[in-house]
Length: 340
Image (cartoon, rainbow, N blue to C red; front, side, top):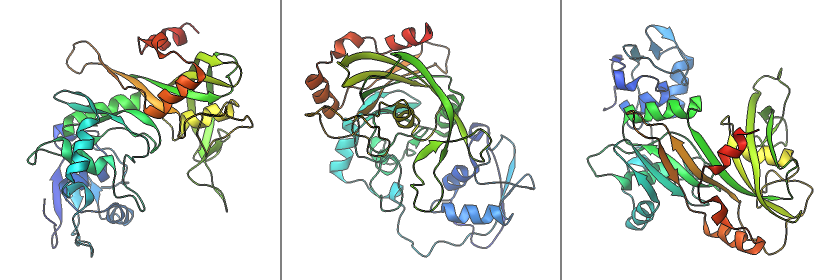
């Protein structure tokens, strides 16, 4: 839609838009609307849902009415990154990442070092480049979950608003199964287990506010995180190939939990441990979203998506003598974890 420069607009929430966050719903309706504008208007009570004050993160319900006040076009009128034309080299790169596609989603094998979303100083990211995956007249695919910049593997984008809402609900409710592979410094003990506890983003002068730390349940802002893990193979006591299943989806959860266990993930410079990594390993974070099993939304068989290991982890597997062939079934780890 164009800018509602001089009038209040009341728009209904359609059936296929239910369970969408208010800020995302608004950005789809008004191209160029910024997060800052939305946050300011909700704080002031100018944006309302069914007459009530709301937050930018409020999830909408079908049939609700959203009041949108007059919005001024931002001073910077340059096209937003996600609407800009994607360079041919980036378009080719994005198409090469596709490992699965159907009428509701596209799955990528995300490479190391490519951000999923934009941020301060980050203009080249999957959210913008995904425009290259569809035709000029089609809607840009929508992110339904995230991976850290240096984590590789399965990343899902929805093709429609309806699919984004359905898939987003699955990821939030954990009604799906995800398996990550990691190479750790040292071997977790016991070899199979579950890590659970409370964590919170660091706060205070000099702390890294993008780093998680241990927390008490009573601390404001703390979240509970649960990870199941299983050692697949080990190279003596120096390193291990570990399968990880996050039961919750917290920021940096797997990296934080392995470091807390005393076996940080190889290449992780933020979450470390006292052990020394074996020499001769490839550079980069050794955390890979290996496989995803999604229940069918149409009553059929589940969708299973598997991402090949990135080159740097393949190289490390060879150095340490790990045999990925023992995990030909990408979900065999789940059977082992369920026996616990």
